[in-house]
Length: 132
Image 1 (cartoon, rainbow, N blue to C red):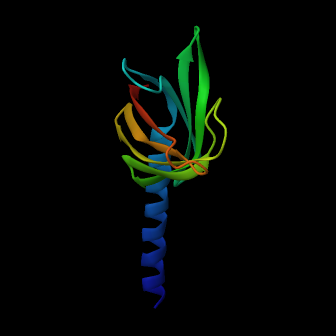
Image 2 (cartoon, rainbow, N blue to C red; image 1 turned 180 degrees about the horizontal axis):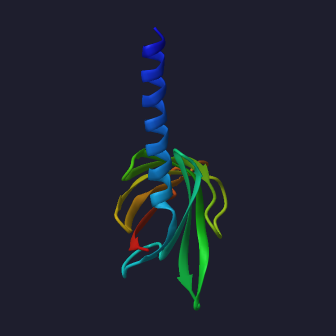
Image 3 (tube, rainbow, N blue to C red; image 1 turned 60 degrees about the horizontal axis):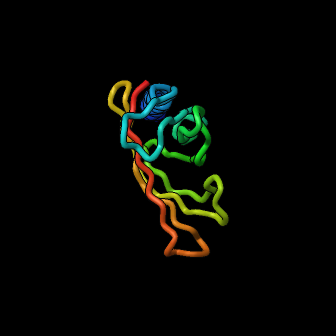
């Protein structure tokens, strides 16, 4: 019986170590390519399964925060999903963000929609592709 417990404990440790490595590989400042809605994304680690992503736009020579996604969930080492409520700069109301993202080495791609919870016809899309 104790052998089974050790095997389960080791597998759990390996899984958690892999999640931590995956979350750390996402961390960084990504600069977008031409044609993006979002021009820069700053990714920080919340925990082994969750990332914080600050989406920024470039205007008048500076980057300004468009929105911050506080709970981007890592689904695989190279993929995330977004499903949370939040705010958009210069907009009123609460928006529901839904989307996904992928990572390939030092590049990420994010896309999704933000729907105003009190006005469902107010839907904003966001898209980003860029690298560290």
